[in-house]
Image (cartoon, rainbow, N blue to C red; front, top):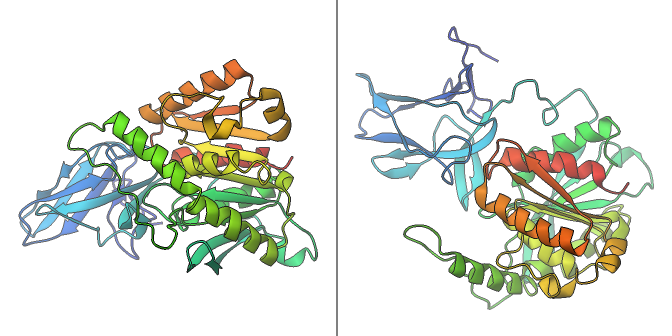
Length: 386
């Protein structure tokens, strides 16, 4: 990789031969855009403070029409951002694009010093397959990503457990292997003998039955209204029974079991997800415990008051029965994502009081961002199918 005299390096997420954005030795990032006719240009991090800071960061124009800004040291990991050119949000032509915020958007990777567990190492690598299948629930073709472990194509009749791993709001089935490097994380864990070889399935978490209008998310001018958001989340949970949850149970699992060499029972089936995907995971698994024995919620969980006698149709009302049936209930958050951390603490208090066995994991120094969820997967995956 090119290193400039000031010690900075082009981000690995740049387009080919693009010198900017540059990551500086102190973790700050310098952005540059050639836009001679623009009147104002700024860098806008995605989703408020996602590790790049809140922004927007106004850029300064030189005599040749080059706009530049250096933002403060960023949290390591992957971050969404875009540029505001005369007030219009556009992607950075110097950066690759990633699907987030329901559209292709720019992204940057800020390296973490002396960390390699999510990088491409000299180990056997699995294969990420792009697979189409038809959903009877939606009446449409759907595209998924399927990771098979390094020995899958050479292991004869060997069968494997399955992890269904979901993305967050505004993302899709490409997120975990593009932004989240899940395939590399699993490759490295498997190579070290720290994780059972497994099949990972990434689906798009949006599914509406024919004739059903999409659920509109509440829009707030200022701070989010917690009551309105809770009502929205409850309604979305109800729709899971006839939407995405039905796709998973009625279409996706049968397709994977029929087309891949899986161990097709609940003791060898896990589901996890980040943010919205964590919310979906809990709703789907808790109401289908005949299908899942391992459950993971990454920065996602139930909204509102926690009543374990009624939550998820009373799945956790009987602690002894639940603990005997569920082999792993795993929940996590980052120290810099206040809402999700508070939600985790609330449900953990309820679980402890009821005697529900679970694992709680806190990612230090990270917010509602991909490094949080990559760390979650890195801790979660080795606990599966042991």
